[in-house]
Image (cartoon, rainbow, N blue to C red; front, side, top):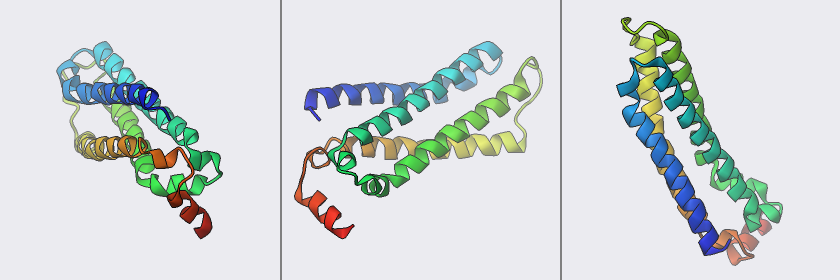
Length: 159
């Protein structure tokens, strides 16, 4: 992949991750306004879906994938795929649960044990998501994934 094109993709992905981090940071400020919280959550979920789509598009663009070694890509980046999908699922679950509990009830305390546990788990998995996603994006910038190399020949012979 050309460096200038990959740089633009990285800027896009860093921007989307920043939006996700920003929404995680400020969403508590809008807990009294149901519509604002809903819009923030929709923005965050859309950013996460775009992140996952772009991740797979980058996988599809590698020489390794085009050579038919899909299992190599999946094996190398399995943790990122799992953490990304888990984080997306936890975000959706937390957003739905918290909005259902607070919608139209600004004077009700919504933080029962289940919501608190889901909130903490979602934020902890979020840290793992940010780390693994950034690490994967930087790894995928390596030329070895975009051309035939000794590393790929060794992977192909092990198959």
